[in-house]
Length: 251
Image (tube, rainbow, N blue to C red):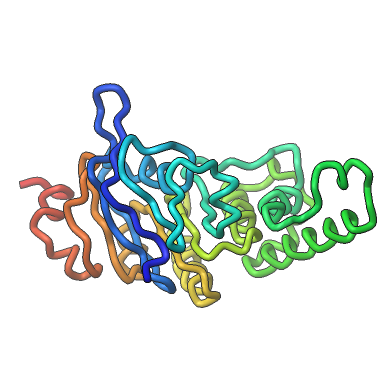
């Protein structure tokens, strides 16, 4: 059974058809990439899958549960987390506090218990902190824990955002252009990291422009052009697809 199944998704913004009848499946334990030129609808597709936008038509099923139109926090609680093309951290908070925010979807104490500062709430907060630190150590950024997020470099902020997503213990991780702004060495490190995340039991769906990264890590690739899917296959077959070559290189 597919972990994620997208069927007939449509999304229009005014006169622009951003996503048109897009369907694909992501099998458990795989890395799948979504590629396409600028304006192809990739980030809009991620927004539809992760609950940041509702589709005009079509369905999204995660772990055989319909999730289209659900709010992002409910989808995250089901085990689907994401990062963003533009980093979204709380600049005035420490790196650790930002990662702890991602872990709170696994918390059980309610608002009232937090207000009363009950012993179980304090215990759970310690557990959340420990899990957040573990995610940061996994990514090799433990020493950044006490630093304010706004003081970190671009690459460090990307790592903190990834740690925040991992802290929620996702079954599936959506990465929106994770290599943006990274140099060649950092991109190579990212490729190894994504493979380690997959080996940890997390299925990965990634939007990315860096073709060397996509071709080195992906089991399958979906290609979008003007909101429509024009190809879906293994990386080598996609590279040789005439429609894909035409979209990227012209006639």
